[in-house]
Amino acid sequence: MKDRRTELADGLVAVEERIVSACAAAGRKREEVTLIVVTKTYPASDVRLLHELGVRHVAENRDQDAAPKAAACSDLDLHWHFVGQLQTNKVRSVASYADVVQSIDRLKLVTSLSAAAVRAERELGCLIQVALDAESGERGDRGGVAPDGIDELAAAIDGAPGLRLDGLMTVAPLAGPYAEQQQAAFERLMELSSSLRAGHPAANMVSAGMSADLEQAVAAGATHVRVGTAVLGVRPRLG
Ligand SMILES: *Cc1c(COP(=O)(O)O)cnc(C)c1O
Image (tube, rainbow, N blue to C red):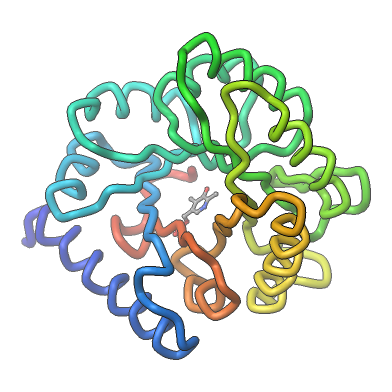
């Protein structure tokens, strides 16, 4: 049986090869795409091994799991991304370890994250999560604001102490016109990113693509891909 370090090393090599090929196919430089390894449901010992293997960006989606893991790895130079739906009662905890919160989808979250960041004397990077299948004024099943809600949230984040507007994030929709159309979904996200950058030039992060669709995300222009399963294996429980 392979030891865990070898398993993770093999997973990373395979994902790296996919990113390299996708960049080459899209005429992009490898450095234009950052790999974020989604470590949800896996133990802090895996995060440590990943760090030894060169990973510097990790993501989690539940504060209950993420907070102890981040504490157990606080000696490592890691960037922690929070990618899950976030309740306001978890905001203070998340603000204590997250470097980037990728799942901002409502004004109330902006207000409470800002207060928590100021209190923690930290600056939090913020991505607006876009639900490409949500109707105007609504939110997606898996979180995210409808595209016409981006401007209002961007303005709020821009004006909020302790927060820095970094860009946009999406999860390819399972239903609606973009179901099975990852490439089109990610291209739509890039258009929304261009409009956002017209008013906020520094907000140039585009987080899209997971194990199943990282190639389409890189082809569309994503700057960050979030990969769990393809590096760590199929998750032991739903996360
Ligand atoms: C779990 C998760 C991922 C990674 O998904 P995989 O299919 O395991 O690569 C990416 N983004 C978000 C928001 C997630 O919750």
